[in-house]
Image (tube, rainbow, N blue to C red; front, side):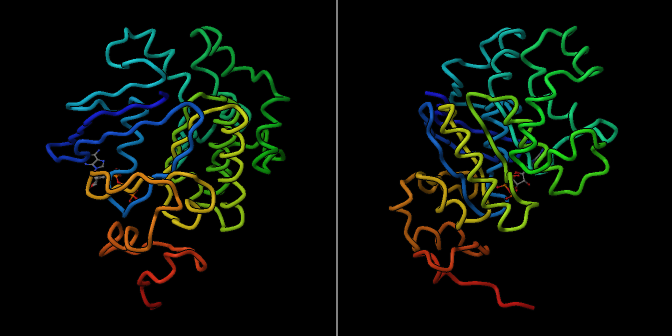
Length: 264
Ligand SMILES: Nc1ncnc2c1ncn2[C@@H]1O[C@H](COP(=O)(O)OP(=O)(O)OP(=O)(O)O)[C@@H](O)[C@H]1O
């Protein structure tokens, strides 16, 4: 298993955020995590990325129990896990070439990593990762001169360059227009499939989730509501998942008859 959570719970500042999550993803599986705002999707991805530690239950990643590892082994494990964030954490003054190259810093010794930060190497491969997100022309641009959508795509290029075994993507296309969002989710799925990388991506768009992922996981109030092949995700399940919230169903999907908020 690439990812195995068993009865995992997480509390932050005294509040229960994730409650008894049991979830398994085999190597190469691709699943979309959906649910209303505040459901706990980001927290679940951060737990899987070892940024948070579960209060109880177990977490296994790429065959290892992260919190049983010593610091060096935990660092090696983390270098095999890639994360895409809604807001890519790119240092303002860093050039894009360096930000993308940072995707592999975890695989290097401290000295080699420092050298890599000062003098970008492997520029051809970095350029090719940027080409895939249509940003090759920004190779030498400073990160603070990028738009929000460009920053998000640089974060995606970074993870393409990293080539992790487990990819955790938190709203990876939230800043992109619909066409680019569709192309970019397709790119992430294609890249993961080509490398047999396991992919778990949270998405606000149910349409994108249904279009690109064979398995959908519904999370609400920190609990799993369903974990099903996309063919079994019914309008009723989606309505219950988003009750009181506003989902984004596809126009031609079975979920299209969900209530929508009237335009202001
Ligand atoms: N660092 C934190 N400290 C305390 N509470 C937090 C923290 N991070 C998140 N939460 C709370 O945890 C709950 C789940 O948040 P989370 O960001 O995981 O949800 P989400 O499903 O990703 O939401 P969204 O779709 O809006 O991004 C929310 O109630 C949020 O307020």
